[in-house]
Length: 132
Length: 132
Image (cartoon, rainbow over all chains, first blue to last red; front, side, top):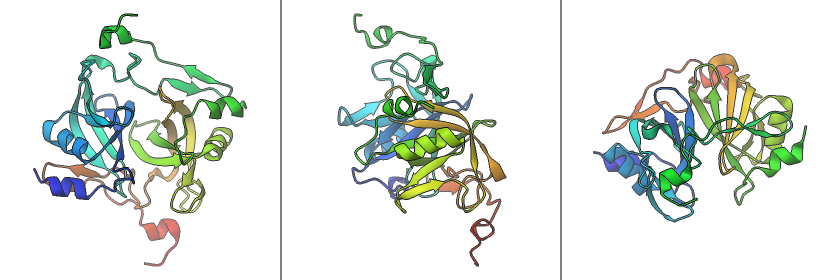
């Protein structure tokens, strides 16, 4: 793989990161937005599985390493000015969100408040093995 | 509209911004990612048209104000931790990208290079009135 070509096209921000949108390749649903550094993008392209950079933990984060909700890469795309990445993925387990919902964008604005629109399919306890 | 409720749920970054993904409400295609400050989000929710914050110009940016490629808001969503917004929109003119393509994510990684996958539907000159 031509890693230099992969990484050089990206306009990293001043923390060396780029936002990465994960979209369900089959349904088109936008699942989540996370961040990547160069190493995460390289791992993702090489392994065919989504690897992000966890800003809270300041470490590489292989999506699904704890929960099993791995994202298999089907397409890797870059936008016009190189500062956003789009991953089309197969979402194993059918759950992308750490809350146990299909995707993270489950709050919908109705003009007066943010309404929760998606059901919890798996409890966080069942995914992460925490006792309630 | 309950502006305080709208804005308080958002976790703005240290520049007071949040990434906003625009998705075609009909096709599901991810069109672009831009940024919003509180004023942009409020204008978007109130007007029903996508308004972003231009980081390069440091000013509010009513999408389509120059090009005519306005985005009519159909759904406004917020993710689990409040740090990303998703807009489902009707893309007037069928072109979201300033390069004249349907969407901004027209570079696809094929393992060796970034390949352009989308045709230019409108020349930037025809959208922005610049002479070539």
